Length: 290
Image (cartoon, rainbow, N blue to C red; front, side, top):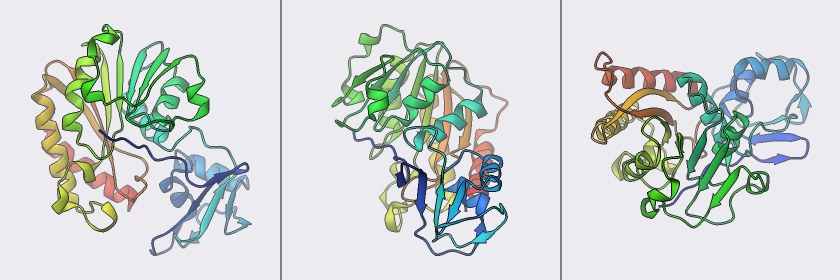
């Protein structure tokens, strides 16, 4: 297994920076600030812009509705909330699905820089096992935290699930270069039957090579729907219930739209048309992140 979370956009001591790379029509400044993951919401973006905390191409811009080209440099003076942009993705999942992690023991599969772990700790998790197949990626802030057990150089598919003794109440997953279908069977064994699993779905690692376009991006909405539906069917085979799906508030580093899923052990709500819900979520994602 290989895993890699996206790290913060280019940054310096004064704050967070993002350099656009794709030529598109002009967009509102507050919208771009959110899309680039520099802040968590459009309302927060407006507040920072009006306060003079956002710099566009070297100059302070105080109009949230100012139209700018996506290629320009945007700097937000405030420090990032989490050690990586991934924290913003998990933050949305916790909020939208209303999953309470306070005083829980959690496992972060594909910890990488530690964005998910950081988010869990900031939302009250008691202890986090940070698992990753790589070495030396975890931010020092997370590595030195006594509430974190770092498990590096470890493939989650070969880990001894009994080492956790049913202590894990929260499982979060952000892996790359591997399908969730190869990872979730192990994670659902590790997490206590009464617990929750939250995973980031990356279409480029689920759809198959023929659907992955230039730059490793899956652009077609119909493929996104198929990815979600295939994963939903797979999860049912694990005796897990899909409790909710949503889209990530920001794109992945290559520009992929990503999705969030929440599952628990037990019987699924038969009243929910999950295919229709998948179509709705994909439509919402493409409208929000285009």
